[in-house]
Length: 569
Image (cartoon, rainbow, N blue to C red):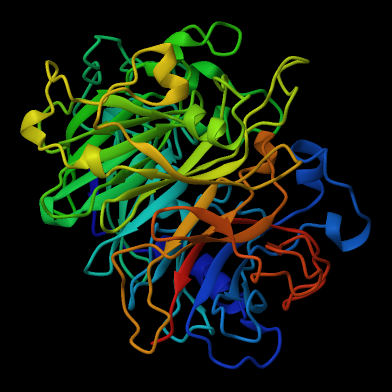
């Protein structure tokens, strides 16, 4: 179903409260810089200590009290005397939002769209006067009756944004939502919401679309569409990652999990049956009326070589992220699984039933760091996935796993950022991406899982850097910087730096050390931590969000989830 042109009249008073209560706070007068990182961060409090962060020391006083979540502005100009310093914060009055994702990249003139995972709200920020920022408006829960638990956003050239609402309708069985076939808040199906730059909902579309069942992959394996409570018509529709090719009028979303049973339940263990293994492609020629074009099941791939109990026999995946190619002649996209370590590729997502193949396994990168690791098994914690603007490199974060987490013999999984050379893969014309091709990359043997694919088109590791984190979490999200820092500012086709945050969702059991690191990207794709991006208080490399005082007050630790590079006008 679609809901169009709804205003925010019902939620007006709540929005006014947030706008009044959100006041920009300056750390100290700062000289203008040519680059900033805008970071969406949550307050760490007693709830996180109880539910998701037993490995972090519990402090007394304000650190345990619930404080405001906030947008932080960090100086990201290496030539600046305040490089790495938090120069502004903008708190929001609502508590316990669990700040999550923003859009994947920012362009001059864009608003920033930022989701509150627990509060079911989208915050829209104006950064035209960076480092000063202001709250433009808020999308309230009543504005999106068919979707909840907002996850990620993609901003279109007209300044509007599509957002994935991973969870189901506010009220189970709402007849406006997927014909009444839904199991309620944080359930299934979620929705796709189009939002204006001033925080008005322009349309909402059920992620289930017109499909009762997704198209199986080429091996014929059906999707895992278990819902709790069960649905009469399964859909697997819990959209998480989202990216758009406006020139092709195509949008792609990845289904991750039914969120009430995974990221937002601080008490129960995640139910492996509600992790998803599907990817959706949408026709967006009518921007307010996305039409579901295809739903594909990802192959088991390297999971076929994982014996129980490392992985559920049915193949628990959680297709968290997807990313499009960018060069006009390319029509492909990538997708990755949070559990299992797989990265998939389809050379043409515009066809009715795209053909997906596993083309990479994170075991290859893990062994580049330590040849003794071998095959990494179980849940690897794969997260952020992004192609470079020139389609030469694929970047991927892996939360990883501490050794012995699954038992005495568990070697764990390195916590890392990977740069993957994809030039040979994306060079394959879509017409040659066929089942009988002898050059198509496919990870289909145990040896290829660890050593990489044997076909000449398979991706290879260009660079990998370990981001140490002794907590239950690790590097989950990233942002690429392809702005020029020279006297001629503008967009570059190559990536020079990547910012990475070490935090997932503490109350899911995966926390992080709350560090924000800068990683330099060399011309060939090799990666190294920028030692000059240092915490203003400790002097250590990477900026720590575990600090007692912020510009907006003494609130203690904070959880940096997502970030964007922003340049001044």
